[in-house]
Length: 474
Image (cartoon, rainbow, N blue to C red; front, side, top):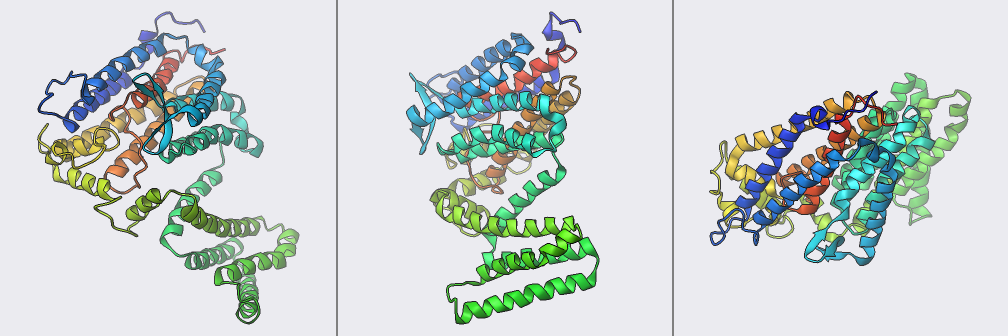
């Protein structure tokens, strides 16, 4: 296909309009969030709103450069870009500046640069390059594992800073694997892991283990539809559990109830191993492995939550789950955020009229909690409009991704949509108190140069690829 000389004809104008709307709304809300009577000029560069204007101008310049670069550059140099950003993530662990307890920033004169924000588009590019040749084989473990490694490497490096919020964002790229042919069973298993994680925090391990065993037994009946087999299996399990309980009570006094149940599951599996092998009962094997894995996961989550996660993050999770209440301490941000959004009512208090905003009740209101300003001053209507613009952008990106002729471009498009979706979902979820506070920005709205530039590059690389969708990358 002949290469087009004018990319402006092919570039998606709708996405650009939505992008411009978001960055404009972001700038106006940052002005409202940090409004200062002594610095009323919105272009006062000593204030955050003045600095954000500079970041916006720079972002527009970056967008132009991203668009005028040949689209084949992103295809051929995707691995080099990924390697460069991984090197930066390693370097920031050594020479980075510590901010809010995390070594996430390079200090370049008076300018701070956060490489994790740029690692998102680099990872999406590398994943696209890999899946471009392996897409039809995503049902094979030797293809899924390298794809997962591409996603998890930056997540692990960022988690070491430690910046768990930014690290979690990369998990969204597993949605891309699902779209490109990964088994739905793997995807559903991932969702079940998330559900089991929160159940582990809400319930004690013994009750959860009993619940998992009960579910497994019900699944055995549904898989076989044989009452005799179901009753025999249940009897064998209860008999083994009874023996181990007596041993634990009279002889092995260190054996607790959770360990008794787990050993009973293991021994029951050994007893039925011959039956499963002889009858080729694959569904029973899957149920059994799921049960064993779930019990191990429950105990590993319990250990990790109590021993590896920082104390302040544990408290945040406990507050969201309703296990603790700390409105004046760790839960202060969320509580004030909810009050701020709720006080906006249906139509809001009016621009620059928000009392919660004006008196600085919500910390980080210009960055992580910028949605509070939207909720208070613009109300439900304004919040609905902002969310609607995000939804429109996400749906537009999916539409653009689906019309790509190149697998590379389509995969990258879904990567962009996945990353933006998880950012919007988590950030707004934090603001309204349904998700623990993990400190990630709202795309294009939150204050900050690194995040704005990172999201701009992420989006406009795809718009550049889409502008040349009728051309061949190779």
